[in-house]
Length: 190
Image 1 (cartoon, rainbow, N blue to C red):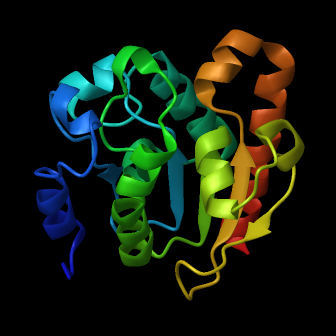
Image 2: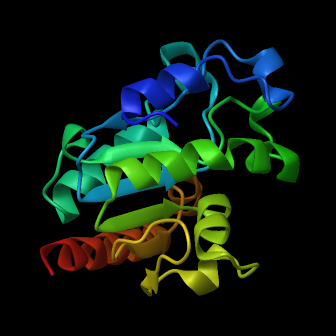
């Protein structure tokens, strides 16, 4: 088993465990501080992320960067950002259950190695996976959940909307996302 994020990323770069591997330009493993207290987990890479090999680099990423700076006081390189699936689903469709299952070990390994204090899940896929629930993001957000099973540290999960949903949804969702990020800041500072 690999012992550093770089080693795990190198292994993941050659992954062919699901059909998403056939259509990718590259694996979008994650980016940021490998010892960060704060980790963001989204759904999967889009077209721009697939091109650049980095998560959240399009319009959603710009919004995330802005809200992260304004509400938490952190820049992207001070946290760690990853996705549930590491390869772009065709036409930005939702990841299929077998794709999520194939990628889950990569995400679990990232979480184990980073051991963040707080994980902010962005949207339904990451929230449902890491909280292990079928409840949707609208009902999940606004609260904190203990992370169970994956790592033994005291990691708190704070679910919020995906930035793409906020871009579509407007002011109320942005205000709610901001309050979730304030909750994350408070959880980090303990």
